[in-house]
Image 1 (cartoon, rainbow, N blue to C red):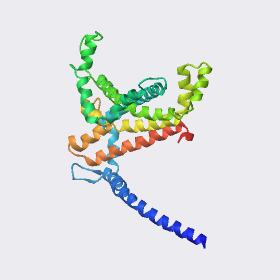
Image 2: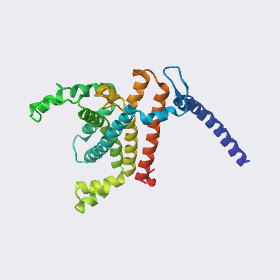
Image 3: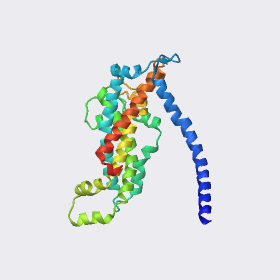
Length: 297
């Protein structure tokens, strides 16, 4: 008799559970999975504007000869290869310094470094653009201290323009990753560091032999999320350089926007390029999981 009651209550609980889950599942299907399927179907169509016709995988074949897309991919991976390691290393070093209990005003420094993450993407991009103008603050400071003899064309030189975007992204997102590292550091037993101090370990030795190994799962997580964010980079390329000069800073997401709204609309090809980002994210995530080790997944 007791077994029947337990089964009855369990079945009723499961019923209500499925009712609650079904609403979320329905909304997820309507607003996420259905658009994904429809976008893939659209990526198989060619034509301008609304005059789309089925073209098979011709859009994907077109990518192989699209010089603008190839340049956008090269730019995006340039940001990825330089910015992500710099940002992760900076976040790790800053979090290690701010985790020191002897440091005064640590709360203030943590807030100050994290604040860029909550600023508007558009507003901070415009500020960065103004700072790096030919007559902007950076050139003025460099001229005043006699490091340069003439203003640097930060936004007009292809190489310096990339540097500006890398600086901007690093400034904004380093604090975000720092928070994850701080939370991980606070879960490490402080006695481990005390034992290292007794053994005479230097700060660098403690960083490489204690902090980094114990933070490996968090480092893997932040690296993957930073990689995904960089592959989707859009706001900085649009608001700081507008993809220039001569597409030298155009990203894949910026190119997708141009295909849809700047040039004559080519929604089928733009959707195919968007799926290229999905494929890149999957491949790079798998590689990073393998390099990070299966135990950290």
